[in-house]
Image (cartoon, rainbow, N blue to C red):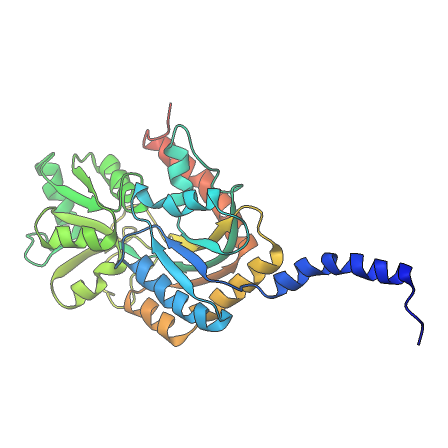
Length: 322
């Protein structure tokens, strides 16, 4: 055994602080993680991510605390990340609107690609147009025909101006020459309550409507995805109705810019495993949502392509700032 010289002891002492960050990093997480859901409680994105949060809590041994920040067309999660430390303890649900809203904002407060860390793509969102069960329209073409014959008389609800649900109807209105009134709400649950209460004539929404369609309170007229919803095989897609519009709308998990790759990997692995747990798969099946798992790099690349496509769509709809 070699005796420890004073010089070696000093060098060993200097080396200890250098090792501490790695040790601290290996213990991630050592406190609660805040998960921001930029929608009101009760909608599909909220419920699905709460299921994931419960599972990830068990896997990581620290609470994943859900914080709802509804409003502003779903960008409040991304805005919160702009100010958050990139240590993995603040993350947010991601959706295509996070990209789109910065294209239509004349003074965007963040860059939807460069100011975020893409952690994991998780699911797609099935969206469609629904009316009350007692509504006179039995099909989407009937609704369109009524809107054309009664300009300005129909009201429709969505998650907000510039949301995916809004832009689908805006594209249809542009192609068909329709004039309808848009009524924005803070979340899917609010939109569907307004529909059931008679405040609006139809809703363009994600599949939070599925249970109400199944129990007979609502009627689904069309879905926007590339394929028909599994539990509603008789309901046409917009493409089936000769409208060249397809929306699969992938969503997932993001964090602040500059996150450590090891922390990203821990979060991605935990959420990937949680997404494949029976409770989450049953939730997806209940709302006909597909599981679309992809790593952060692939997710980021998809959002870069989506940003370019959305810019062209918004240009066609005259929604880009001057």
